[in-house]
Image (cartoon, rainbow, N blue to C red; front, side, top):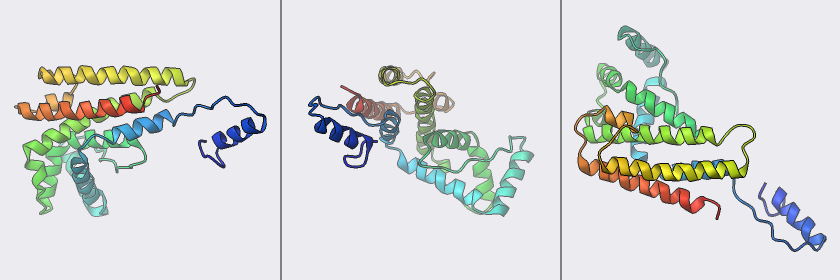
Length: 217
């Protein structure tokens, strides 16, 4: 669409030049793509990498996969197994993380039975970061869904992004006051250190800046 030579924008500019129409064409990048790029600014890749590594260990072997499903069944859990992560599909990241967070105790039991000890699963700081990542991905997923669908024009999508930017400010204010009602995974954990909440506020501020810088002026 925006290619200078073969894209629609390039061809349109050529036609305007041929017809001596000097009005400048204003082009913007795909808003959904902008949102996905902004979402990648959340600096918790180390947490995501560990989760992906553990899921691949469980699902990479047909035997381990069946054993894990049986363990879920024995514990009375839903046998819906954790999903693979697909970097292209942002929504898959949020659902994968939330399912992993909900099953983290089962994962610890299973990995120990397999003779594999994952130290991060016993690290309260890492679990806290995982909970925050689950919550922020849920907010980003909701934004992504609102940006999609029929009859979504640029004005409506831009208004949605502006509303989300204001929401990020609200989330930072709530974290600053140790109010976690908009962070259900974090809220489920006991005794979150104040410095961790300050770290998450800084992360939200970085995310807000990313969204502000990419919005149409």
